[in-house]
Image (cartoon, rainbow, N blue to C red; front, side, top):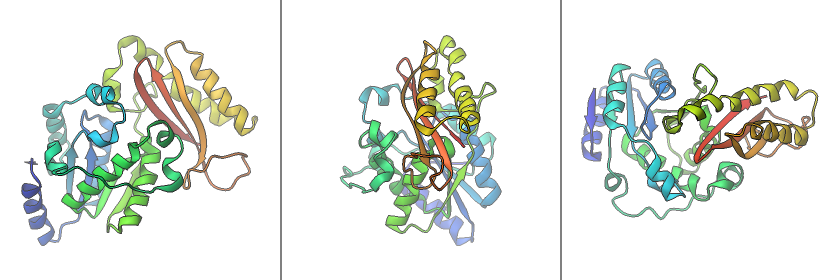
Length: 279
C-alpha cells in the first residue's frame, strides 16, 4: 500500500496508474475506520482496478467546534486496517494541503440540504461539498463509494457532481451494522458501556416502525418513533422524518409517489447518532 501526504505525491501516483489504463475507485473517509468503511473498500476493489482512500477530518463540515474536537482520530490504526483489506493508496492530507486558501464557495443544493441534517446542522453540507469536490480534484476517480448511513449526504454529493459536471460515478453501499443492529459509525468509539447497551434501541424502533406503516398514518408513525426512542432514558431524538428517497421531500401520505425512507438523529448524551431504514 502506498501512503501519500501531499497532492503532488498523490497526483504523480494517479497519473502513472491512469497511464496504465487503470480504473480508479475512491473511498473518502474521516478516519476512525470500522467495518462499514472497509466494506466500501471491498466494493471498490470489486468494481475497480485500484482503490484509493483518504483520511481527513474536514473542519468545514462541523458547525460545532466541540464536536470537531471530540471527533476520534486514529491514523496509525486506520493505515493498518486499510492495508489489511488491500487498499492500494491512502492519502493523509493536512488541513493546509486540502485548503491552501480559505474555501469561500457556497453551494446551492436547493431542498436537499434544507431538511433533516441540513436543517439541524447549518453549513454542514456546504462543507461536505467543499471537501468532496477538492478531494475529487486531487484523486480524479472514475467511481466513488459512500455508505447509505449518510443517506442525505449521498443525495447532496450526487447533486454536487451534477452541478460541477464531474465524470465520476457515485456508488451507494448498504449500511453495515454491529451485531446488535447499531449502524456502524466512527462516533460509536465515543459511547460508554451503558450507552452501548441502549443505542441498539434506535434500529429496533425503526424496524418496528416499518412493520407499523400499514396501520398508522405518516404523522402518527413519526410521533410513535420519537416517543418510542425517547422512552429510553439514555436517548433523545433530535428529529424524525420520513422522506422520498430521491428528492428528500417530506412524505405527507403513504400514497405519495416514490420509495420512502425514515431518517432519525438521536443523542446519547452528547454523542449524536444518525440512522435510517427503507420502507
